[in-house]
Length: 317
Image 1: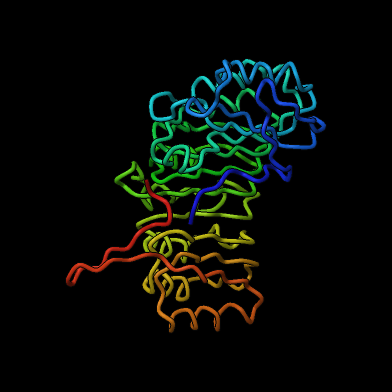
Image 2: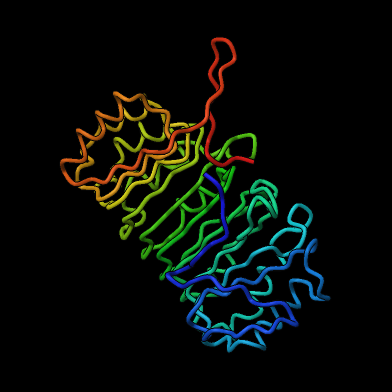
């Protein structure tokens, strides 16, 4: 799986805020998700990210902006997201209609996902109590201490390595409106040291009463996660479950089939798997007659070295 620029956020199409001299007709402030980005290698203007964000605030009516996408803020492997986040925080009294924020909409052509230097993103939640959606790409230096937020409905982490401390922070947070939680755990080599024990408070149910979609993805311990999910009380309240992008084998699939019923789900995403043809047939036979849409067309890559087989997550570096 490749990582692309966001095409939309919060149901709004992404729109790149133009360069200073561009003759571009601007849409209505609330009709798009505004992407503000500064590439130090290709951008020939005199603006840096801070200058571009300030021009955005004076060009577009900020009180009507509903969604903001933060793209490149400079050299991501040298500078972290602090400055970009600070620009958002300083504008909190002007961005009074803000409902969605994504921090780090950066592709591999611009920076590998593991090179993106993130920061503590919870100040964004504290500054914008009306926020409905928060997304983050990149796990390096990412921090998410436990937070309380009454209105957040979607929380998404796209990483090649999600720190266990972030998972524990999410699990300890008070997010009563949260409906969609997505976490790409990644691999230990790139900081993805989360364990099944870190996930336990989420899997136990009750922590997020409104949760309807859970994605625990892109993990090298995907079989262990599948086994834990198979007995997890939270599954009963879900409409969709995503265990894609990781190293999920017949062992994990068998655990799912031997666990609690999954036939109430509308969708089960198991793409990027390492299943045998026989296991695929077992999954389809067990779930599809009940109306569960089972995604498992994409196969993961693997290498053999003698008797040893190496399997990979969809996204790491």
